[in-house]
Image 1 (cartoon, rainbow, N blue to C red):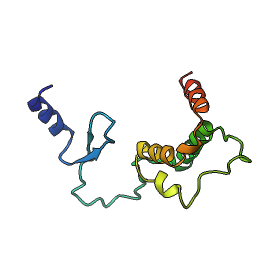
Image 2 (spheres, rainbow, N blue to C red):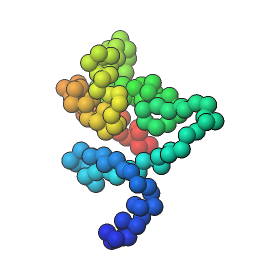
Image 3 (cartoon, rainbow, N blue to C red):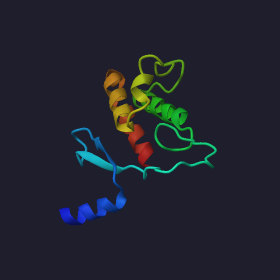
Image 4 (cartoon, helix red, strand yellow):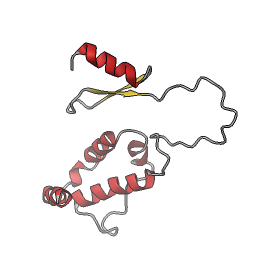
Length: 130
C-alpha cells in the first residue's frame, strides 16, 4: 500500500485519530487509532452511558492486576504468599493502572529486576508457550 492508498483507507476510518507512541524497541514507532464518530445531535432517549478507562464495558482491572502480580511471582520464584505478600498498593499500583500493558510490564521488570531468577523466568516462558 502506498501513501495515497493509505490516506484513502484512513479517511474511511474516521476524522479524528490518536497517535500512541510505542517504546523504542517496538515496531512500529507509533500506532494510529481512530476515534469513534462524534455524536453531533442531542440524544433525548439516551438512558445511560457505560464505559471504563480502556473503552470496554467490563471490569478487567482486578484480573489485570492479578496477572501482573502473578508474572512477578512466577519469575521471582515467590509464588507462595508467605514468601512475598503482593504488589505494593501505594508504590506499584499507580504505575500499573491506567497505561498500556507494555508500560506496566516495563515498570515491574525494572522495579523487581533484582528479584528475577533466570531459571524461573525460563520455566515460566516455556509453561506459557505450552
